[in-house]
Image (cartoon, rainbow, N blue to C red; front, side, top):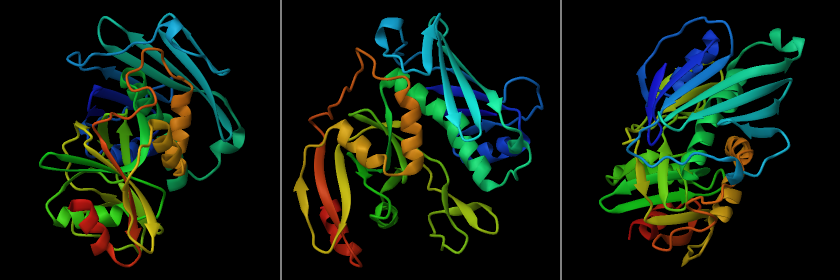
Length: 323
């Protein structure tokens, strides 16, 4: 399949597993340009990134990286071995500095026999997608522009680009629903890449229980006996300069005060979501590069607030947010 994402440009993904291919195609529905499945032999998954040359790309050199024990970098090839459940996976990133191309190969190092017999249901495909397909893409954002993944919503209107972040269950999605009714645009309501200044919303489907109601701003793109996937509102799929950040917490009284969090604070809070933690863990194998753009700071022009979401009284919270 071919998808187009901000900064990285065109990505051609080859997946030699029909079920995983169909699952991944659904997840990338907002980015899909073309689809083609071929039952090739060889690596399970491969990527080819035709990076947008109009953006300044940052390529690693050996002196720019601190190695983890399961990684190495040689001749423009960065190799990581990850232990996922019953198998080890080897990820190899090759960077062509002249042609702005990044090739990624994901292959099995060892696999236990029982994997062949387990039912390849939704949970199996979900885990493989996040581990073997999405994580390398997120890591490439980290390599080029020092992005990390946040458990956030990114909403825009006029000259305001707001990032809402917090733990599960604090009400981000509910607030986003109300903002849509007020004419705001949603870039993402669950996953946002952030580098201390710029935000990129990942417009992936939202997974909810089968019995969960569907708002008028979403549509069902998949459903089985337990869960359904919801397509989100149309987004621009572009990077945005973040102008305001709200750390959202649940409370029984309103609090809206200025704070001064750093990127590490946002990262720690975001890692409360298991999938986000897993992907940021994958990024950590690349470690921090000397010369990275954002380091640990957030642009001082971004207005930061701690905002309490009032239980059973969303209207009060909304007044504080949009005033």
